[in-house]
Image (cartoon, rainbow, N blue to C red; front, side):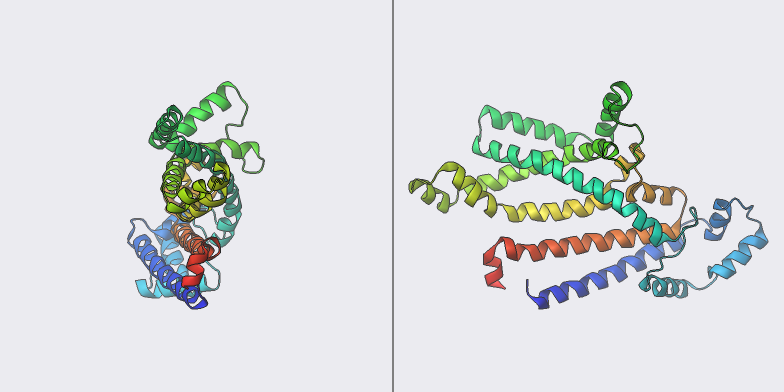
Length: 312
C-alpha cells in the first residue's frame, strides 16, 4: 500500500471517528435519565432539586446540544474523555487500565484458536470427504452452534465448581484466570476458522501450480506448507483482523460470566449505570482500535502477497 493510500485511509479513520462520536453523543443525549442526578446518586448524595440544578449548571448540561458536543469534542482531542459518573474517575484512565487485561485475553484466545484451527483445517482439506474430514466438519458445526455464554457456564461448572482447577472469579492478573475465558472465546472461533482454512486450502489445491508441482515430483508436504498455505493466508489474515477488533470490543458476555476485569465488563457496568461519559469513551476507543487494526491488516497484504506490492 502506497503512502498516498495510507494517508487516505488515515483521513477516513478521522472522519469516521468524528461521525461515531457525534452519533454516540446524540444517542446518550437523547437517552432517558438526568446525568446530574445519576452523578449525585452514584456519589451517595440525595439528589435534591437544588443540588441537581447546581450540578447541571456547573457541568454544562443546560447548554444546547451542539455546544455540549463541541465542548466534549474539544476536551476529547486533548485526551480528556470526561469523568465517569458511576466510578468518579477519568474515563481515559479507566479505559487504559482495562485495555491490557482484555488485550491479554484476546491474544491468548487467538493463539489457542490458531493452534487448533490451522492444523485441523489443513488436515480436513487434505483428507477431503474421508471419515477424518466428516468428523472435523461435524465438530466444527457443533462449535459454531454453541453460544459463548453456555460454553462459559459449562466450563465453569466442570472446571471451577466440581473439579476446582481454575478460580470461579477471574482476577485478570495471573495466567489461571485467563485460561477459561480464553478457551470459551477460542471454541467458537476455532470452529469458524477451521472451516475457513479448509475452504482456502481446498481452493489452492485445485490451482494449476499445484498440479505442476506434483508432476515435477515435489513432495506433498512441501507443496502444502511452502506453496499452498502461504497463498491461502490473505483471507485468513482479513478474518484475523476483524476477529481481533471484535474480540477487543465484544468479549462482554464472557467477561461478565467470569467476572473478568476487562473492557467488556466495564462497558456493561457503564450501560447498567447509565454512565454516559464512559459509554461515549468506550465506543470511541473501540472504533479507533478496530479501524487501526484493519489498516494494519491492509498494509500487511503488501508483505504477504508480492503481486499486490507490484500492483501498487
